[in-house]
Image (cartoon, rainbow, N blue to C red; front, top):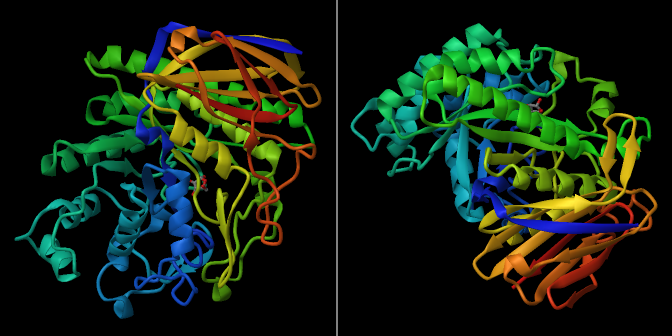
Length: 499
Ligand code: AHR
């Protein structure tokens, strides 16, 4: 098949903010313990952090990292994770039926972030807690000294305030599974009150209010409208969460997941516009797509649950999905969707980072390796610079059970002065696509690098035994004058960088 891409150079979408390439670390399973933190590991540094993991996180190129949850945060007491380690309590984690040892908390995690070069996006607990505890945490973090909590921070070894600008007002409060779940009115009112109080301490905070935990939630839409009615003037972002998986072997529908993400973003953007008008506001609340990924959630739901409360484990193996080439191609297409909406999605966090539905895996005492999904994320994060540019695609369509007819190819471009990049995905299961694109309007005259992720076996994956089974290959390209051509193999993701 053939596809013609035309760069809509006059239709710049908006800046590709670094925050689009954020991550997420939750106290869940082996994410923190034996994931990022494992004293005794051969690569562990003086603080007990695995240097092999730090190197991979740096290579992945993640900007802000959301912490400490997720569902975990809705029962978390931040005080448990500060102060002398030997005095920290062991607690029940009701979200994941585990024991939290609190060996790692705010100070340790901030130190780790300094090693990986990422910014902290901190979530407050609005499940079992409220305004006062959010204010306490803010005082502990942001006040230089001279008050009880700021002096406690200093006594705990951190003289300077933590430089935390982004704060999440709870997590997935629309979800009945969430500890302290509320209805939209009750949450919207609490979020607005908490936001106002936090701004009395620091007016420059960037605050994220909870949107829906999935587009398929029965309250989706009504939830956003109600929450924004209460909180529009108080917040900077509203969150979206979305996870995709292949169901019953329907790879065609799975490959079209970005169509659902596009619709989700556009529907929330429309609600934000209406709320903005109703609030008579002159600023637009952004979308923080702060949980997105491929997650085999049905598999997780059908697994035996940890029930015996006398024996809740520390750091069990949970949500350790092993990702295939197919999953990585879908993830690449979701990134294309995020970049295509860079005007509205001003922050996003891949959920999650290490071991738990993650691009990076570790073995206790052993290796750390890259999953297939690592590659489209790392390459898009590195190559998508400057401004996002729309790409019109003429190509055959594919019919899918879940999303109807969808274009076989999806693409986006970015440009930054003299350099540019094109990202594209072929969703066809067994047909290659010859792509032609006139790059004159991108002002580029040569291809500087080009990568393709595909495999004759779309279920091929990396593992402890075969950590480099799947890696991106160099993509053959031809540039005749300003016309660039390349071939997209079936089920493939490509990135072409030009200058
Ligand atoms: O990322 C795993 C879980 O998914 C998070 O804890 C929660 O916020 C979401 O439901």
